[in-house]
Length: 327
Image 1 (cartoon, helix red, strand yellow):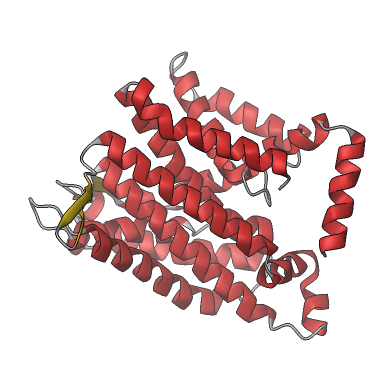
Image 2 (cartoon, rainbow, N blue to C red):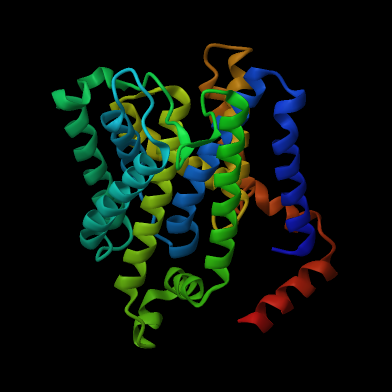
């Protein structure tokens, strides 16, 4: 991204950080939900936008992490934040490793169908299993305690503190993904997306690179699922279903695949449209779907692609020359 884009991102983060001081509780909680799904969409964008792997089972890692928190939490007491967070993200990463070891050897529609199949397996495991509360799911009566060595760093029961924790997690993940994209590993993923056969001919073990990307994406989705379970205090099988995977994939497409900030923009517009259209009609999915179709038809690069259209041609050419020089 350019310096101007980074400045815009920094301004947006600063505005979100100050939001709890001037906005009401509903607005702050809504912003926290958008940030969580921005993190979720960014994790999928690592697969779809950078490695070219379209997954319809990504919600499995999101939902499993929430179930880990629910199962590890005492019935009426707060669970320790750091241990349950590490456990949830670790389980999501290990699950991604196990599934990824099988599915990354496929390509195209076969990869999509394989991830869909594993996602539905996870859905029915938790939907039909008594250990997970069946179709009703599980409740989390108290948010995890943010203490370290006996010192309370923050109180997640306060919506302001929770918002700042979610915002900090999103900022750290954004920086991590930016560094990852600029690293040799990110360049190889770009090459795999463009032409995997050529990358293999150059000597790169493309299956290993895709597997690492799959595990990283699963771990980040687990982080988003953990935070979502903290916010809503309930987990159910719907969080693992293909509908959830399809929704987050549409967020990525809406914002712009391959763009660093596109998934966050897509998540914000997705939830904003839902809130807006629900105020007008009970058939809010119809106008919302029309907007998504229009974006897919007329903005192939998503909403983030509008930046390139409004920029002067000289600036676009200069940015392209910088990217070529870096490559």
